[in-house]
Length: 448
Image (cartoon, rainbow, N blue to C red; front, side, top):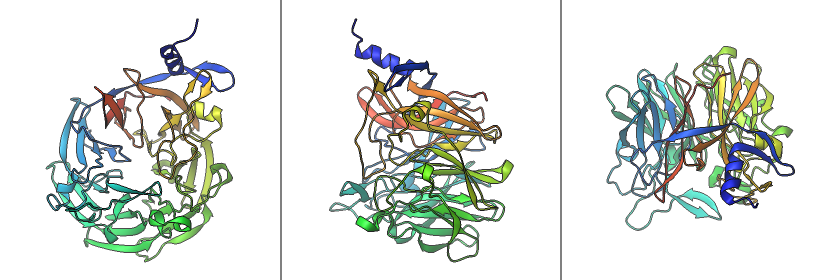
């Protein structure tokens, strides 16, 4: 009896498939719950979701529109309700200005003294040689004014517009030294590194860190780092370049210094830094682990987990934490930049990673396009949740994630872990023939 497409899809959900042998061992699956925040044109969100001390999950839904800005929301796990917090363009004081709007936030929220600190970015682009560039305003509109640093008061719900990025660029990377009141950021597309002092309210432009960045063409192109690591002990900020350099900024300095250690490892692959469509040797995401005073990060394209010790300035490659099907395939995942959904859980020992997994039908891997000049998915893939226990080095693929109707969450590059271990992210949802990006949750806790 010939298998129907529905039967094959169900088999793919319940079992891991090998390109050579077909069915392998049974694989666990997880069911995600979806929410409707009320923003039907919401597009893919990167990073912009975080838990806060009030127990809520705060997130931004992005917009690609030239005149509709991104929107900020909160979700209360205790009531199961979402709340609209505000429009990013309005929070920046630019409503009605006819400039390209603040379409997204590309950074995590950082909480300090009852406020959430974050940054804005543009969501309206122009395509040049298959690459995303700053949007060219049509008649009647003015150019993008630049990304803003914002704060949001958890008690009053009020925004404060702190500063605007240099050179009218968006802010694609941000982190904050909460002890010293210093915010660090990297702009897009050029990659200017800047520092903002909350006490003096002065923003210092420290120049480009990676040549012409993603504004460069041909041999001048370089992908821009998406994660700044901050050592709370001395306030040093670390970032990478696509060539693999690890750069350190010490508070009070006026320049970055390269370390002897680099991210250029054979395990991570071989890259031409001037070629678009990958992150090169940049780390994709990195977090601080207080127990051993070190950083844990992931190299996006290869999916390798590493430990970076700022005391010795050394990197130790630990394990490949892609999904089990990806490990068996031996191939990189379909998302060309790798995944940003990587975080340390509330137990301060478990790393959570939302990553991809190949899809098989009739024992064959469904391949996407060979190359892309953007950070995008080259083809369809499953979404998997991987956990890694730092003290015991225990890796575990918790399974592929599906909605109740069997659909896959797509374009996932964000994560927040609630106090009870529930995992939250932002993904594409299709309902009644319409697709939007919105909040979803995967119920925890996940036992060690």
